[in-house]
Length: 275
Image (cartoon, rainbow, N blue to C red; front, top):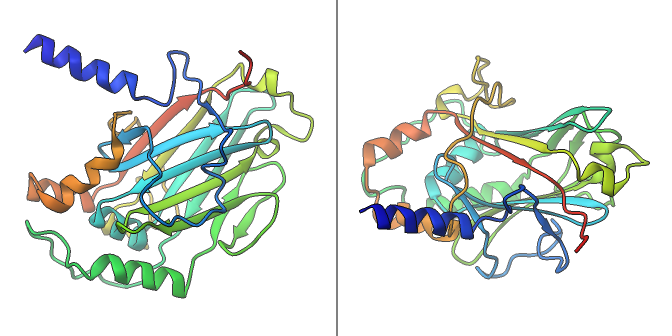
């Protein structure tokens, strides 16, 4: 039993995108640039958070920070579509910065009447989510950054902030962000200097029951206080979404999670690409 637990822990550690000193990947392949069309399920992400049911990867190059989140679970896709989520940033390099991205709901309904059972969502639901998104993609709100703040459209093409939402052929949802490092550290940042201190990211998926309301935990428009991390990093995030589609091990827990804020917190250092 002890050997099994040790093996699992080693597997989790070995698959992490972060090294022991929390340094993220150096971006060299343009895999995640928030401007590519996802045609298949070829993009594999290194980390998985069980609370938010998101696989994720972070990386950087000399100019940008790249974030990508993959949501395979249909329930979680629906939750994000109808309740929204937010990502908070905190840097420790002076001048310290606190910034936020608010990803709003894009399926606006005053009341949610769906009842979830052990078989999960109807097969047509992922298609409806995609269809409604592409008919009226929401503008993501940026605040607290050095230069670019306000609403940014998914269709807006520029060299500054950018985000995209795509679905692959397996109906897995990808949410990607490209954030210029100068937005976090100012125009004259030195990469060697800013890689010395941690960046903290706090993500929250808003609960369905808080849609459109304000509370301590946050409503559809804001993630609110984000507490501690939701499950940490794991391995092989790309396969966990299939578990929810095929098995639904605990239906009551799955339904309950739709009506709770789910939180993810990560701390990391940028990569200076120095060998």
